[in-house]
Length: 530
Image 1: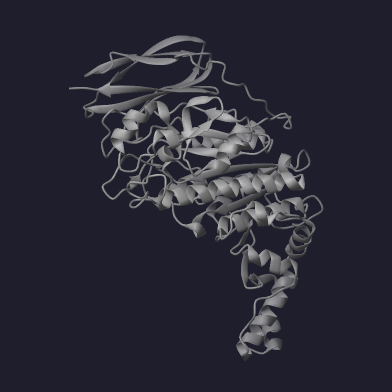
Image 2: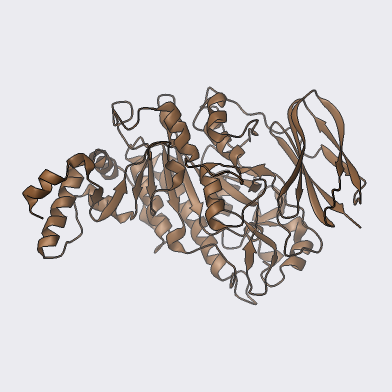
């Protein structure tokens, strides 16, 4: 095609954005991004999301030392020796995988929050469906076409992208680096972010460098298309300006890591003054956490695939936080990890673990309320192939708490975005910078709020619980994490109550009663016997 013909047939506004060989897609409406943009006048907080792809084995990441006997019986071929588990300040019952020294230091210095057993009712063991659930915040029996970030942005900015960028928000609302655009940023009518497939391309963009095109007529036209696309990209200039103004310390990151490259680019853009509120990066280009086989080296279980993956994740997060600290940006940034699911309690004969349910996740930054939220999962003495970690915290409560206490989003708006009524407000973040919400810290630690008798039981059991008043939820899950019953789901007056759970021909085995009241949750292990 001749250049003049190209000009006639390809309006500039319709061009795909290709910068130095790097595909960039404009993001439409993301709920969390919207929350960030909506609160930009009140704070300059930034959220960085790290997707841990493949389904991480939480039991060999955050190791329950008080359950070590049951854990060893369930996974003797992959078990980490107790003497090599990394100690955490203030805890004698929980430690980290030996390769995670970076996160150990962050925890001990007060910059890391571990949230135990995060999941959702009726978990999916499919990578694709489980990922969709996490990025859309849908129920397991739903199919949503919008991301949880996208819904909020559409609510807050119904005319986006018309009129953007503007003086209030001149920069991209969100940026995803290292992969194609995730559905998390999809709004009802448009995407709300930019997707940068290769972090190095940001450097090329900032310095006007283009990857070479072939010395052919088609190559000449390709070069021209790239030039026009770069000139018409409404965010190219501000992205380049921020990148060139920012600072980074490459020596803080592990070498040869794609995740490190993505986080380093994020650190540079943040320190360079970009107003983008949400960034998302992925571990996908550094390997998969889908460790069905060869998770460890037989006879040397602290080494192997999982150890390498965890070390890379840990070192990258530590390097990123140290980089932000060096540039003076650390107070503005909160990070979180998520994986589509955990792994089963019982290891398999291939020295690996199969798809599971709930797992821990990490929240990190200067403003986290450091420590461990929740208790170590209670493990059966003789786990079967169907046994899973029961959910302690719904992942949507994590999202909602971040929206409320970091992005300063009013609770009524959160309810319409997360689609989870009466979510738990979790003590994750120092919310003093937000005027819309303050957290109540769990003052009931160590007090038993839910119990059952008889236990084990055959036909029925009486579940007793103590609520402080307000919305109260009592649920029963089976060993695979499937929700069997919502026994209580209502506002109640403070007091002691009892409800009966009937055995409706359920199979023998381990079951879980979960209690939720405000910020408080407890999980009670129950057993059905013959």
